[in-house]
Length: 205
Image (cartoon, rainbow, N blue to C red):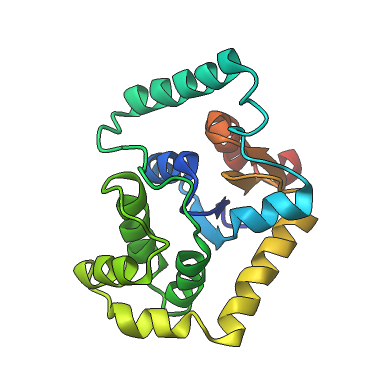
């Protein structure tokens, strides 16, 4: 059976961006294939009764500061010098996550994801604005207008809902989440465990 890592993601998560940048190295080391599954983080939060860590940690300044420290350590360790917090954060990602479904149908999800993650976490774009998204897609070699028109198709909307509901049904409560070797892992700090699970194979085989 081919090795694979499933990556549950939403472009609105800074940690998903960081993972996106380092996953290629893990895949190269393990020979695993990437299964990228676009989901709506807001939908996951609502269905799982979860909240962004910024909300529960708001009254615990030391814990929020430590979360930021861990993020900075990850950035330094992997040399992710282009990362910038988006000035529009949190950004409504419904439009661009539907766009991810369209891009996946076009077999162009990797290029689309590269453009959206860069726009969100390197360029500081407001990707809730359809015109901003169109311009970013045009710059990345897409027909931005045509792609965005397809985000209104019922089947595209339904697929994003189905992805999100399926993820929650499998135990997902936040992003980034991974499935590897028959197990679920949450958070960028679990990448070493993800790699071990890939190499171990399903159920320790």
